[in-house]
Amino acid sequence: MAEPVPGVGEEGTIRRFGPEVILALLACLVFLGFLGSVDLWGKREQRASAEAIDTIDHQHWLVAQIQCRPRLEKPPLPRWTIASLMRLTGRRDEWMVRLPSAVSALATVGLVYALGRRLGGRSVGLASGLALTSMGFFITELRQAGNDGPLACFTTLALYAAWRRLHAEGAEFGEQAGARRWNLLFYGALGLGFLTKGPIVVLLAGLTLVLYLATLHQLRNGLTRLWDGRGLLLFVVLALSWPVPVLVSDPNALRVWMLEMGQKAGTAGISHHNHRMPLAADWTWMTLPWVVLGTTAVILPFLPRGKEYRPRIWFPWWWAIGNLAMFCFWSVAKPNYFLPCLPAAALLVGIEWVRITRLARETDQRASSLARRLLQFHWVALFVGAAAAPVFVHGQMPAFFGWSVVGALAVTSGVVLSAWAWRRGADGLALAPLAGAMTAVMLIGYGALAPKLNPVRSHRALAATLDRVLPAETKSIMFFKELDEGLWFYLRNRELLPVPGSLPKYNAALELVIESNENRLELDFTKRAENDTKIFREWLQGPNRASDYVLIRTKDYEKYAAGLAGLVTPIHREEGLKRNELVLLHVEPSAVASSPHQDDPVRR
Image (cartoon, rainbow, N blue to C red; front, side):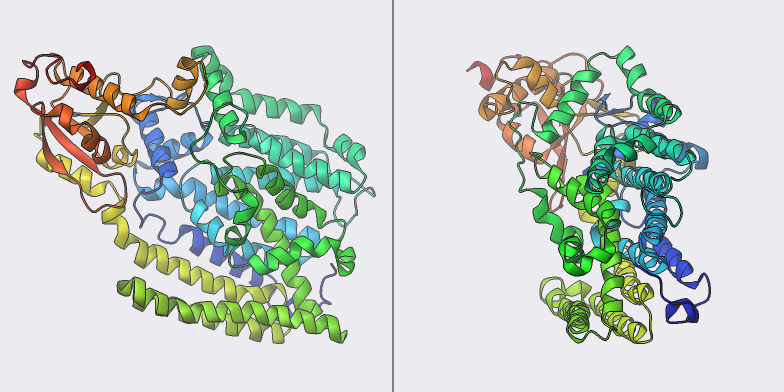
């Protein structure tokens, strides 16, 4: 993976730091541009925001509560970060909630550039950073609040530090080790990753390093270099700084954590309702728009021409493909689980892009012809896709047609400029026009198109409606079973309280495991509905209620409506939304006077 000769191509025609400035600018635009324009839609960032608000409002720094029950499933570092930003700035908006993930994205891009530069030179570093900056799945995930973005950052940091320890600057493995200080960074990053999403960071990094070193027949030597007593102590202190105090205060937390990990890996003995195809089936769309380059890079180490990229290519290869294979054995592995491995996919894309662009200029007629055809295929595919997009949008979403034309022009222009830059001698930098085009598409999507969907996906309008229809003296609103956590973020100066008995203490899975000898999630839905109706009626007919107003999901209300006749009156019902719709009920004054067993379907 030799660098171009100084003075030739991009190295001689672009000012010293010009390419890096372009990469940094595109990354900032992609991950910070219009960061707060879209309301909180997704379940993960709704939960993240609700946890942070509870942390601030109720000083629940050790264990936050959502739905008025302890949130033990996820470690606290992202929550602490969001809550600290809110407290320091005094702002409680979407921008603050998402900023930690966005900053994690910027740091990850920088680490990928640095690691790519050490794997294959400056061009590979640039191409890898640009590929990650324009990878659609990575962008959409890192623009959301949650644990996955910071986990990807800490995983990348840990593996970057491990690489620096295993390989001295400019040396192959076995010749010379890097400074021992890299071990402290390696173990520190693992500890922070543990505080972000638990032991998965150790599995991701450990599997990558073991397989890489085993491929090089340097497993013992490599692990010896990475062993560090001080670093291990740092990891243990960081990793256990939250679980130990939590266990002291609540010993049941261990059961929650074991069940959470067991459900994901399929070892908990629970029949999960959402089985998925093996995660490898999602590789194509997770790596868009670089799926062709990413796929050809996967087979590169096994090709005769791939020997010049070995052994270093095995590092990102095992990081991406080794972990992907591991996730295929998980019963419910979701695409966001693979997010910490997308930096490795970007490195493979960067290596392959630089290889193809250089090979296409060689004198070997057959090899260069194949390389040119691959480049042309990639450019043509993007060009055709951009040209076809407005046609599709015009038929399906005509209101977005104008912006789709602008996006199509950006992509087609990027293709033309990329081909022109390659002909002018650029390698890694020839990817910049395509990354710039994807940046334009993303900014159009987040700045102009997605905000139009806020009214049908957000809870902002519902919060305003509740403030309008409820009496000013009503500070508490009850809710039956679960609500989407986004309402906690947008509803201010009122408290949401659960109907007693309608929620488990921790989560439904743990409650069912404790109570069921068969250890399964499947229950009789008819009996469950009858029991829920009984709980709701008993609360409605009880003398002590914190509020006469209660929120319930529309689909739940429709199941229980017959058993609630005469006890409640709907005063607001949501319709036509693309989220869980709610009904606001007012408890009738006569409910308390009603016979507790009158028309009780459970006792008929």
